[in-house]
Image 1 (cartoon, rainbow, N blue to C red):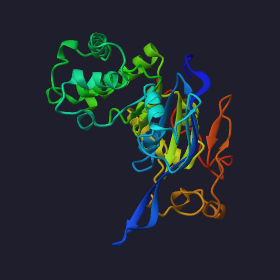
Image 2 (image 1 turned 120 degrees about the horizontal axis):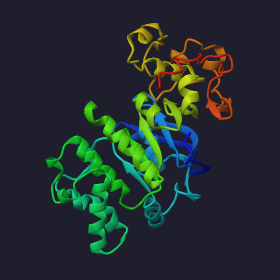
Image 3 (image 1 turned 45 degrees about the vertical axis):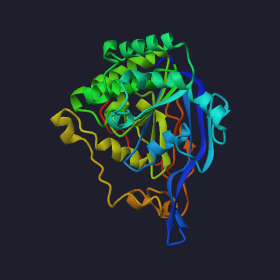
Image 4 (image 1 turned 90 degrees about the horizontal axis):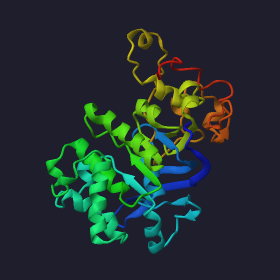
Amino acid sequence: MTAGIRREALFRVRDLKVHFPIYRGLLRRQVGAIRAVDGVSFDVYGGETLGLVGESGSGKSTTGRAMLRLERSTGGQAVFQDALLTGMGTGDLRQSRRHMQMIFQDPHASLNPRIPVGKIIREPLDIHRIGTARKRAGRVRELLELVGMNPDLAHRYPHEFSGGQLQRIGIARALATSPKFIVADEPISALDVSIQAQIVNLLADLKEELGLTYLLIAHDLSMVRHISDRVAVMYLGRLAEVGDREGVFRRPRHPYTKALLSAVPVPDPEREAARERVELPGEVPSPANPPPGCDFHTRCSFATEICGREVPAFRDLPSGRSPHWVACHHAEAGAGGGVTRTEDESE
């Protein structure tokens, strides 16, 4: 972990749930619910980047949005700097949102095409009434320079920029109010491969320069390993594993984590041919009708009778001096396997 991490929690999530009701019939009666997030608990420490990973539909983005109250939670708590966000009134929530922002996945969809980018970046300053009109204009130029853009382009419209430039503008907008905490929701997945590394490096540089704390939502594990300090793995709305970066990547404790890591290509033909691959049978179960017991047991080669009957406790199995949380009945027996990648692959 980086030296800048403060071990007190900046953001605490406890038993967070987001269930979307399913209605049917002419009377629109509720007949069930999609359990997008089903009781997740974790901390985000000041100055760190926590990577939240998992397959599409695992609940990653919904978790991030619910933390910022962009999505209403069904249960549980989200606490930012000792302020309980869940249940907070509109006025207090607006004040809290000044210190926590979001970078969205698709910059084309998240920026208003009818407004010049300078006004887009200035909008959070206007909403929170930060500074005079002159200072806000200066802040917009400063933010564009900070993300590597020419401030003289502030009068142009979003359609005049490339995808990478639009994402830089989205990052500038997120930084406008000088937030402490940022949720980055797959910030590079909608971009060309040629510019993804530029955005990742920009986020890393901004973190160090501004002392930011990130929740980085991603499915690109190579990017997560490059920028994250700790990693949380989600499956079907629940956390499967949480630990420091090297502990998760070098010695995963959960079989689902091992399967995700085995799917990451290695840029060396000999290593790629020699390493173990884990193929998961079947499909991801429906979050509207999850299986009993462990959510993963229907696809797990280590599953036993208890896995289909009891939900595994989310418990700490320390990896060295660092906490390493895992939800697996057979984690001590090595269900997650050993080292899935060679020790020097990250170099």
